[in-house]
Image (cartoon, rainbow, N blue to C red; front, side, top):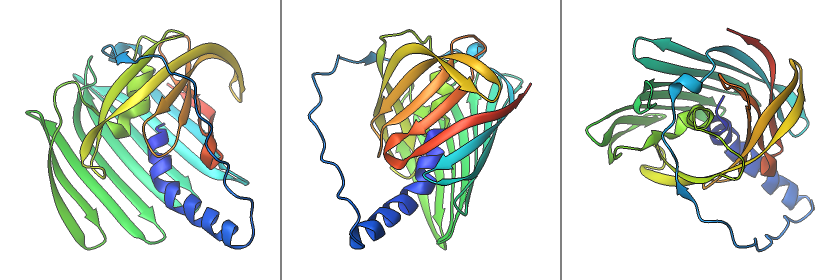
Length: 252
């Protein structure tokens, strides 16, 4: 499951709700606090698709007081490719994302996404090759052609969680990971910080997992990936948006 997908779906809803609350006398947003000097990030090592768990995971999605959200994530291998398919429903919106990557490097091959929002539908279809990302982005009746640089070593942003799970995670590692998103139309660096292994209580029982913090997008994202391989995503959070994603079931 990829937090970027959820972030893209709920960002507009969350900020709209926040504006309405402010207009009705809600509490002011907290002011940022200067952070201490952060350690220098090194380029992320190559991921290895052999580290990934394969199968289906059903997740519960919570956003604030809304606990009715759901997500189903499927990882499958066909030939020399791994496909990550994600179907999410939250707060009246739906997203379906499929990303194809080559094995074992997880270099992107293609990415398709459909978001059905109250305000309309957004679609993107991107193919990677020759150092370029090419395709289309459709918003309502408006279609925009995409042809942007995506140098070797760039990953697809929709597959961010999959890439992270396939890295050689170790406590204290700080890396920079380049990822391309068709809505941003450029490759952006994401800062990845690997924390200590924690024991999480889940519907599937206790799981030891690395805590991974990702910065560089609209909001800080937290991931927990199983310490044991093949590795899977045990939890995800977007603290600023009061979002949490937790597993309900797992099927090989």
